[in-house]
Every structure is written in C-alpha cells, then in structure tokens.
Length: 129
Image (cartoon, rainbow, N blue to C red; front, side, top):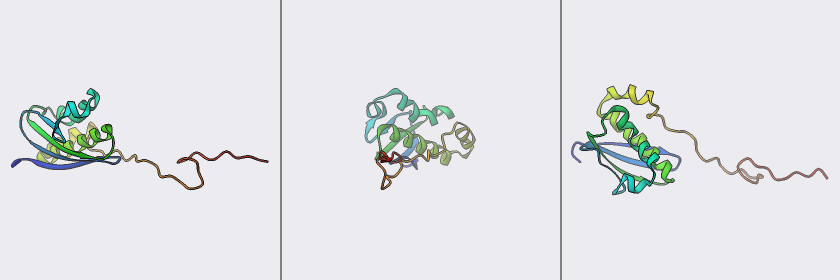
C-alpha cells in the first residue's frame, strides 16, 4: 500500500473508499473478489470501465471499502472513486475520463417525504362532496 493512491466516490447513500496501486488488475471489494461481491456482469463492467477507458486494466490493482446503498449504487461509487484516483495518478487522463462521463457524480437522490401527501408526490384522493 506504499505506492497506492486514495480517492472516494459516492452514489445515493453508497460511499466507496478506493485505493489504487500498481499491480495486475485485481479488484477487491470489502475483501472479496469483485465478481463474487457484485454478482452481475454489468456491474463488474461499470466498476472496470475507468480502467478500460484509459487502457490500464492490467496495470493497477483496486482495493475498495464500500458502505451503504445497494449493489448498483456501490458499483457506481467504486467507478467514480477509481476514476478520481486515476486522475490523481496522471492528470492527462482527465480529458479521456471526463469525455466518457466517468468523473461526474450522479446527483439524483431519494426525494423526501412531504407531510399531507400519501407518498413523495402522490396525493390522497380528493372528494368533492
């Protein structure tokens, strides 16, 4: 962990701490292999996308600690953290990652419950008489 770079990423309520270190392309999430932890190939592709976009998937190992959210939000948080760590390592990668949309945090959050309503926006049935 000497030469590792630390970055964070988040999505909804999921927060990922990401350490990027020179290696062979191994990805560990909460001390488990990424494929086993995520369980779906599309989520694994999302996690690996910053490394694939820059062509560095076989040069770095990724170690992640993720808390909160669901598996999909956790995968998006890891992808953002990995992209930020790559930019810290090499500033020239910023343009490539930004054009791929990997440096942007998704701002969508769960809408709060409002009083006087059945759900977030649904109203109770109105009767005229």
